[in-house]
Length: 141
Image (cartoon, rainbow, N blue to C red; front, side):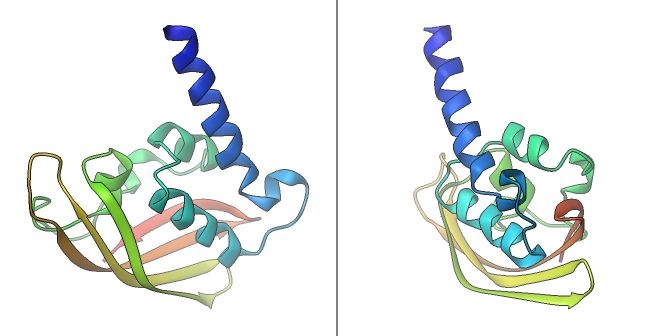
């Protein structure tokens, strides 16, 4: 049973890793790196361990909201990464490179907590800082 779990984790990790073109020897643009991350999050094909592997210089405590929120009524990226939300769907995503190595993503995210019947939708702004195609910092507004 454990070997099946390890094999499944390995397959998911390899697929998520291959989604990032810079890992394949190509220099991915910052927008492309961030878009790939949202695609993987929405497909629920990425775990917090995968994100940690893809963003080794990003400390997990930095993946938090910069505002006080009630996470029962607000979907944050850190809660998505921790699998606290199901059926996550991003809509109206806009990606803008606002300055060199900084990507601002705005949009809405919908989902529901496993213990709740009703889904909610949250508007968000995420600011990603990258260096050489690698995510090094994150802010959520």
